[in-house]
Length: 210
Image: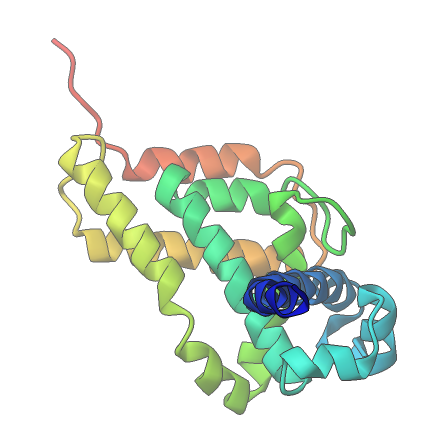
């Protein structure tokens, strides 16, 4: 009888351990997101990461090789979430989400929680060649999601057809980067909704009446 219990226990361990590891990884990412947003990459010391995640450095770096690997994983996670929004609602909706809450906002599952990460990614892309090289491998996800969304909109007759999809993709990405720079400088965002309305209107197909 003892052997049977042990056998069942052995079969359960891998699944429980896998769920636990996934939950712990999510705990680290969610806590470090708030920490990086509040203090920036350099200011997010190991001690602050420990406080933000509620875990020891040993537990944190058991899942991530070092602080940069943790930040890259976080940025990749946020890029994936943004790509999901793009697939469903378009890149302009990502921009609307970014201006709907201030940078550094902690807690919750609001889409704009990724703003702090996005600001830090943009800063490090300008100042850190090694990070730029590592991020290049991960940055295609949002571009591909935007391109595919635009193609679907064009096929549905909702997208202007006088401009190539690749050009429209670049246009929207440039607007996104401009918006991120605007927010990074601490400039007000409460009057930008009409600007985003204009961006959205500029890529739509305009049907002539009459």
